Image (cartoon, rainbow, N blue to C red; front, top):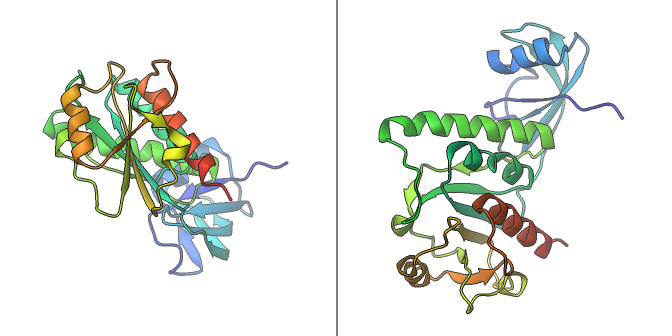
Length: 243
């Protein structure tokens, strides 16, 4: 089977001209890495649910042009799942962005917890967000996921305020935690999952989570890395809502 070539465009694809000019970064990747030629077919994503298929009409490493022949819109996955994950060492934390995006997470919130050792200075936040979004864009192109997750700026766990319409859950090692799938029976169109550091949440943080209305759940008796727990929780949640 021929591999589908995909590109990303920040332009809203549900609107616009029949010919699209791709940005320099996408054009360079298509020309220098994927070696596209005039006449090649490309699928373009805008990260907001719209997909477009078209034929390359001009090969240019700074401004490749594609003539659009087909457009379609893919609704977001239901329910919308946002996941807050405790920050770990930079490379390890960033490694979860790709698989979470491939699996269709709706949003990612980097969390500073009482046991989080990593800190990001204010002047570096924008650069980090740009890097994380780039990783998510690459994952969307690789997987064909038409929805780019919203990656928020890092925030202290205690300062995070869930929306009223969100059903909240917190991964916990405490004995009162219930199994995850039964917990998901809560009717809601939006879920927020909290994944803590490997050392676990402090008692104070668990109390804060309870005050926020978060239901504690268990992913089993073993202590998982934050990255593993995040992927496991999202996978279980997605399977739980499959038709």
